[in-house]
Length: 390
Image 1 (tube, helix red, strand yellow):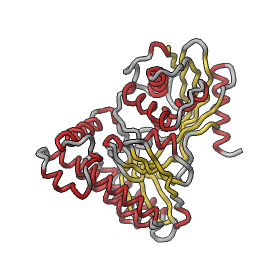
Image 2 (spheres, rainbow, N blue to C red):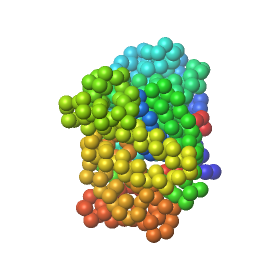
Image 3 (cartoon, helix red, strand yellow):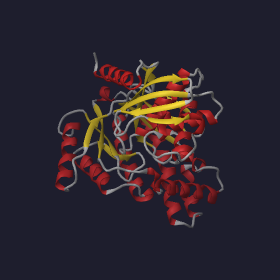
């Protein structure tokens, strides 16, 4: 039995111990790491995420009485009991708000969803910028879609999950995280146009090019609901209004200089520059991947980090240290990934040799030790499968 199969079996057994019956089914949804394209998704822009091997696994059964019974193997406390008919935004801020928000969003959209028993267990690191919340939302949405026969497509499920996080939990995130979790394919990155949710699976076979992708979890926890993320979003929207466009996606890269000259607010100007340039970096990355020039993606990652650090100002000392140490040790490129203010760094490195991934990882750990900060968590991130029934 594989490790994944053993973990799924434990979730099913724990469900039976909690609720006294076997579940109707088991589902999994992954976290994600975003290769490039940050803070572009709520600006109708381009992103390039891939699914992680880390997943949220849910054992779920339908109920006929409208009650939600929610339990997490990873969080303290017992079973959370809620009434589906009484769910309302702002009802709780803990982990249970994510699956409960999905039930609320489905019901608000007119889908006949009632009660469920849910037991969850997740291996997606929390607070690391790797979309642990999206994994919880998407696995719940997929289970409810199948159990209630809703017939929703994956982009629809992602939109429902996003609405749960935006309107129920209160985090104004874009749709990238949920789309990556719902739609990713093993061995590929997801080139997503967030304006219309069109996407293309881009082959991303790192092993064929002698490369590895690492994630460095700084273990600095972020909290996107604290207002900093919302402030950046509001600043981008202010920039779009000032430039007379629906979203910053509509500002061509070739016209960036003239657009910036029309903005009086320096903060808004910086935000606009980052978004327009990161959209261009995604386009350039796709061109390189399509041409098989994967190593040349590295400098774009480092360039993107500088923009996030200096223009968007969402980095932190630990993220900067991880990027600097990785690049100094011979990585092809590195950048913070996710919402920032902590979380993780993505590193593109050679598979082996004096500039190989193991050498880079050791250098990052040594840099953290010299700086007197806690040891980071480092793991490989092969492009993995999206949400699925087990």
